[in-house]
Structures are given as C-alpha cells and as structure tokens.
Amino acid sequence: MSVSLIITTYNRPDALFLVLRSILCQTKLPDEVIIADDGSNNTTKNCIDNFKKLSKIKIIHSWQDDKGFRAAKSRNKAIAKSSCDYIVIVDGDMILHSRFVEDHVNHAEHGFFVQGSRVLLSKDKTKQTLVDKDIKFYFFSKGLKNRKNSLYSSFLASIFKQKKMYLKSVRACNMGFFKKDSIDINGFNNDIEGWGREDSEFTNRLFNNGIYCKVIHFNIIQFHLWHENSTRTHLTLNDSILQSTIDGKLKWCNSGLNKYL
Image (cartoon, rainbow, N blue to C red; front, side, top):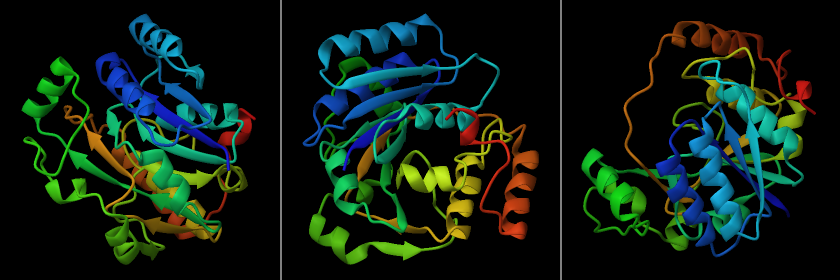
C-alpha cells in the first residue's frame, strides 16, 4: 500500500523544519510527502527546498495564494496531487513519533478512516524545542501537557482501539484514509474557510457514506508544538455548513476535491 503524507502549513517554517526532520527518522518512510501550503512566503519554500536536498523521498510543494485560512482547499489540492493509495494528513506543527507512518499503515483498514493521538507541548517546551531542535520525546520528558498520550505500546493500542461513528475528538491533524474514500465524498468542503469544522464536516460525510472511524491510542503519536489560538470569526458560518451536512445526511459537497482532479 503506497502512502502520501500531506502536511498543512502556513508561514511557520521553524516548526515545519522539525516536522520534516521527524519524517527522516521514520521506521517506514512515506512514498511521497506533499506540503499543503496555504500561501506561505518564500521562507517556507526555502525550508522545503532544503529538505529536498536531504531526502530521497518524493517531495511536492502544493501552494495556493494567501487569501486567508483555506485549509479545506489546500488539502484538496494536495490530495489531488497524490499518486498513492492511502493518505495521511498532519499539521505543520506536529512532530511525528518515529513509528508514526508505520503505525498508520498497520492500522489502515478498508471501511474505516484512522484517528491517531497527539501530545501537547507547553509554550516553554515548544520554545526550547525550536531552539535546540531536539525532536525526541519520552513519557517522562518535561513540558508534556497530556503525558499519557506519549505512552507507546502496541499491546495497549490493540486493547483500547475504538471503532465509532460520531464526531467527538475527530481531528484532521492526525488522520489516515484511503484516497478512494475521499474521492467518493468529493473531499473537503471548499466553502468552509477560516478556522474550524472543515475536518468535522469531511468526516461526517465519510460516516454518511458508510466509512467508520477507528481511534487509536498508544500508537500513531505526534507531538504538537504550542501556538496561539486561531481566530474564530468564521465559526458560526462553518457550524451552519456542518449542521446542514448532519441534518441532510449528505455524502457529497458541491465544491470539493473534483475541482482539482
């Protein structure tokens, strides 16, 4: 099974650099890495170009004009560029556990999308990490806010995995799905702009199309660098789009992935 790792980013090259470094430490490398860039400046481009020199992995820089927070469109454009069977989506401030990609592959299952877990780094720990560039974290590392999520155990993962069809705790910052499943629902909804609900609306249409969620604990771990909260100015509108999808049991969005395929 071939794997595309899609990384969303916007003008945070210092964090993106650490995420890209964590890819080189993977026990199983993705077949390609696609950076879904929501309009960053040339500093991010330079970061990606430098990574290309270090890596033998196929690297694609998918860039769109900076017209505000448009994660849905950016992800759709990246998915359209993917040549692989399976898509793993992460954010550009998520440092990956060394077995991250391998875990996603091991837990992939037809009829499901996979949700991994994240460990939140404190503000001080994030500042320190960006300076010393140490991307190895352990259960007893200082500055981990939800420490239990850093515990790695395949045995515990097999016991505590959940299969569900509801939206709570579903986030696209650590999600794996078959590319065909995303095509079948027309990907993310381009009409959702600004922070919030693009992942919930996407996963709700997966549910409506018979694709369940598999939640994995103690595997598929990532470490989230601290940042200020994004503005919620579009949240009311995005909530209404999500509610329409829920009420109408929609499987398809009119403005989605097919615009870029």
